[in-house]
Image (cartoon, rainbow, N blue to C red):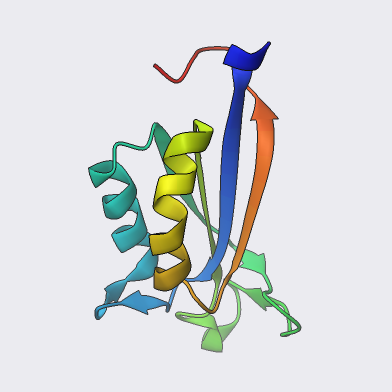
Length: 109
């Protein structure tokens, strides 16, 4: 069973977030790829909120740049522990959730 365990990290960002003047979610994806993390994806949300803000939707005229972006990645514990300090620096103002998951199909090799 231990071989089927992994760690999944979910980051709640805004599409307007930047890292060194570039979109934060793209910079994080590039960083994770460089660090050889197994899998990562970004979902651009059509509606949502972060913190205690009001709900933003893609239908609002003034929503440009303020919609949520959710970045999720999965890998072995040692890989996640290695990249998390940099991610915490890059997204210091955003929510990061880490959880143990079971790989139901496939593997992280």
